Length: 562
Image 1 (cartoon, rainbow, N blue to C red):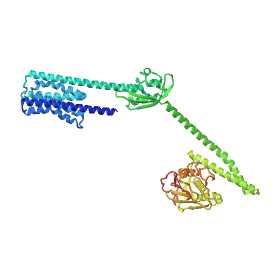
Image 2: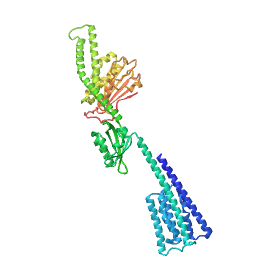
Image 3: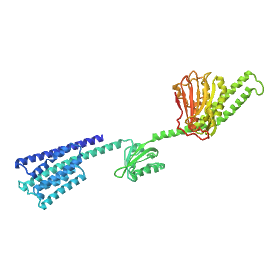
Image 4: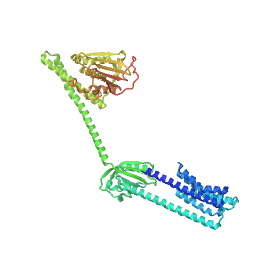
């Protein structure tokens, strides 16, 4: 809005300039025609004078171009001074009746601009008058061309100058009234905004003393503005926040930069309110500040801090619970598994086929429960950042064979064949042996679980961008809709074929996390009816025949490929 108003004012000023110059040019043309009608054809000097009288018409045409208005006004004033000097030289020099018009040049400049414009116009008028006086002193002026008695010409010239002075004074008053009205309107608008703003607006001296306070003082501090005018802002600030308030004011008063602080301000009743104090230097050396009530935001921040502390407390309690329960759960489970295995093998004599079946079920259930507990505990350690890798150089094929033996019995019961194929240059690897075995066991377990009888689960390893371990099964596969969910803790595929399968959904999540701990990635590829392939890429684990690490490769986090 302010920009549009400014542009409109500029266009109006340019139109007024064009109109005035056109009127001056018309008057000059009338005077020239009158001279021609009375005295006949003018000589060269008179023709130049007539051209000078009509020069404003040229300025009017230039006013329609993109030349700036101040530049056109300065050209007009300079040409006006030059014209007066030229006419004075033709009509008697310093004694010419037209010399009185030199005084009107700076007066007219006052309408065009400020003090610099008046100064330049005065210099131009003085230079023109000095040139006329110099030429007269050197005897270079022509004879006067005045036809009327000198006192009559003086009377007409002074009268015309007086009329011009009156017009200039009236125009100056009009401009001053317009400026006063605009200033009053602006002051009224600022006062309106300050009086109705919800934020407190204050004006401070360089030392921080309050010189003005808006009516919002009552809503923020419970005080009327007059109560805090003359006080230092620090006297209203909580003792613990005084340094912050001083630093903000110092930024504005000493360094000339915007300052801000979040402080507690004392209300009339002695309570404190959280406020955001923002200040900046003003042109007159004072400081202008805006203070906003942020109590609600501080309450929200406090609630977030308390919620975070509660979450951290719950996390610590969970970690403490899992640490304590790991011993409490593992100890009896080890006893259950050990004694049930003894009964299942009938180490102290036969117990009968029925009891043997019961002992086998007890052993399997205990082993399954122990695996679940170990998975949950390992996932908890990884989430807490407390899972430590113990990297070493070892034989991948031996570790893979141990994992295959661990799943041999469940695979035989499911009618699934386990196959192993380790490339010769991938046998040695540098990683955490226990973590790699857990990765293989989890992937083999999933493969056996979701592969129908007669299928197979194959483990291969090769060197490609580091060391890759690939576990591929010929099972039921995974739909594209479920593919992206897998790999997150406790996520499982739910359908008619898998709903009866046991598990916590931590297998792939552990594989992903353990791969990431090694600086690697896990890639899941699957489609319904086409089996599933999991590629575990470990760029830092591969070693060459000399036992030296293969060059590292950039990897990505766990991703699924359909």
